[in-house]
Length: 281
Image (tube, rainbow, N blue to C red; front, side, top):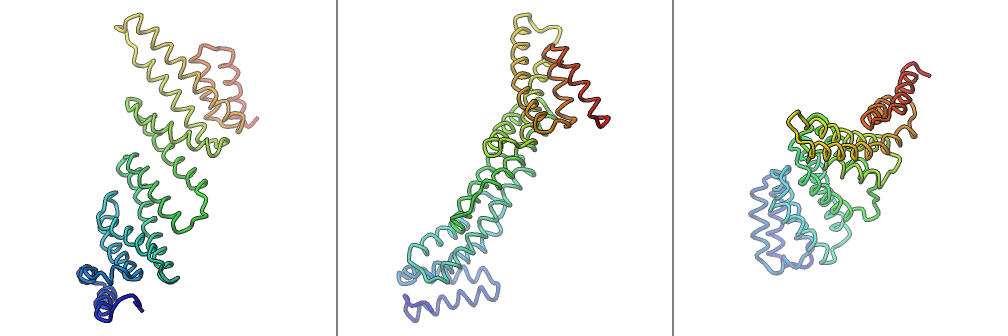
């Protein structure tokens, strides 16, 4: 029952419920907007819950849009409802809608990542997912989910960069995401390896930018910068080798890094380790 509102206003909100039961969202929107013209209704926590639900349903058409007026209206209605000290059943109802909004934002962050290749929007959607999920479950620890999300971002952008080294921005996004993974999980082999590969390929990209017409002074700068990138790659690949000594990709990468650094002895050492690993030794 809606104890805070008069009988006439209860009738209006019952019309909202009847529209919802009939799955007529346009009817429900018209009914709830009409009901909320009353100050009495606007003082009732359960009425705001109804409004949150109706506008959540309306927002479904915007499920892959980061901006949605209907979604914002639904979320704001939940905030107001909770501030009006609702009954336990309404609190749980509000949490249910919040959880659905959080799920929409998570699906959105994945869509923006893989389909749109838009990290800024993907990251924003993921932050909103966390924000609203924590309103549902205040004790939830996001560490594992953060590792999962930023590993996906880092791996995806590392692959994009490795397949097209001219897209320097992909490499930078990949590095930022992978460093977030290592902050949370310092022994993450995949993130460590992908970081090493990005730095190595950035160095290769610089070397490949040289040609016969490149001025001598510019050649020296390119060589110095490429050497720095190979040296930045080295500790990541060495760490992978420590964590997983039989990792063939890491052994091959270390062989190539030392070759690029003109360290023949080390390059031959890792070439032998690579051949032994291939034989199962």
